Every structure is written in structure tokens, then in C-alpha cells.
Image (cartoon, rainbow, N blue to C red; front, side, top):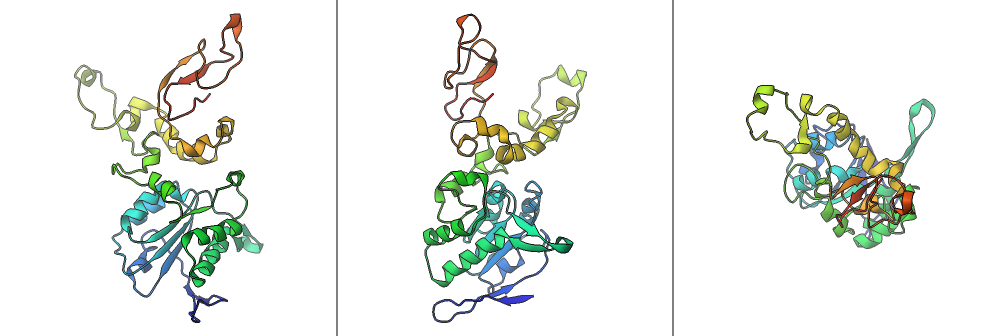
Length: 289
């Protein structure tokens, strides 16, 4: 299906929008076609699995491209898309992109489309990315993160510092922001009394160990992506700690000694421990309950 935007750019240039159904195996096809200027991908993320599957398909960018990803937590796997298309200007969704359905579950309104149209209007006016960013903020729907004045639903070239945190400089297969979290690439290790008597390198980091050697770890790793962005447990942390910090273990559990960087009331017998907590000594992460 081909649509024509109801506005034109300077000099009367028209905007033609080509729409089709796609899957991760062919969704980036237009990036290899000089005819197209940009690509909008709108779908579920499946905890980032679809992006990783799409990044495994060899697609060579031809000519300038603007790419926009509408999904839940698109920044999580932005590094994989950016590695495929390092010369493209990419807009990644920060939070889930909202939509409304009508009769027959037909989509009747979409935040992704509203923000996409805002970008097109900015391109039509030949605005810079800072001005386009302001258009996106006006078009985006309400998110809890909107209490932060600088929040924008789609992170693009106007946010180089944020983009840098979601690169994969050490090429370990996940964004650098998540290097302090559990590794999703689990390795099943069977318990063996005979093998346990001989020290050997398992070939995996401790956070990757799964199977008999770490029952329940698979559930923990699979849940962590959701906890990072969506859990209300983070609301008790100061400021926007869930966005600004990555977890790094740096303390110990003590029922008698409270964390030194978090105020606490007087506990039993004059101690300052009101309740047991993890005591974080690393300056990179506020202590949590």
C-alpha cells in the first residue's frame, strides 16, 4: 500500500509512504534500496529477540537512511541495529509504544505513527534534530517517565550521550548499559561430583551458568529486562536512579549495619538499622532494599 503525506517539503517535494507486512527475516530490506530514504519498523520486541534475529540477516545500507524503531524498550538492542547500519540516523523507542484498538481489534490510533509524522514534518521544514526532538515530545503520549522534563519517547541523534550508553563497545553481545546485569546467554552446566574435584574453566561467566548448577537462574535472567524498565519497585529509589545507573555488586547484607549512603532511622538498642538491607559501597549505584 502506498500513501502520500498531506504536506510537502520545501520546493514542493512529496513524501510517499510504502506500507507492508514484514518479519524479522526481511524487515530491513528497504535499507538496501537506494529508492527509500527511511524505514519505520513497528512491532513487538519479544524481549529483544526479534531485533537480534533481524540483525543476523545480512543487509547492506545503500544511500542515506533514517530508521525508526517502534517497540517496547527499543534501546535494549539498539547496539545490534546500529552495528548493521552505522551510517543511518536511528530513532529508538525508550518505553513501550502505545496504541488503541477499535472494533475487531483494529488499530485506530498509534503513538508511533504520531511521532513518525512529527519527524516527517520536521524533515519537510528541513529542521535540525534538536527541533525534530521537540516535535516528538509534543506528539508522544503520556508515560510515567514524563515527570522528567527531558524525557522523550524516541531517542535519536539529538541525544548522543544516551545513545553512547546503549552501544556495545566491548562487543559482548549486549548494550554496555546492561554489562552489570545478568547475561541472557545462559550456559547449562550439569553437576558432577567427579568433575567438582578438579578445578577447570567452565568457559562462561558466573552470571551465565544455568541448568542443574543454577536452578531458577533462567527465570531471573528472563525477568530482568522487564524489571529494569517497568517495575514499580524502582520508584522508591532517589530521583531517576533506575534510568541513570546500572547495577554493580559492591556490598554485603547486614541486619545490623545500614547502608552509609541512604538515611535510616534508629533501630533496636540505638543502632541505625531500621531494617535489613543490602549495603552498597559502590558509588555507581544507590543502595536498594
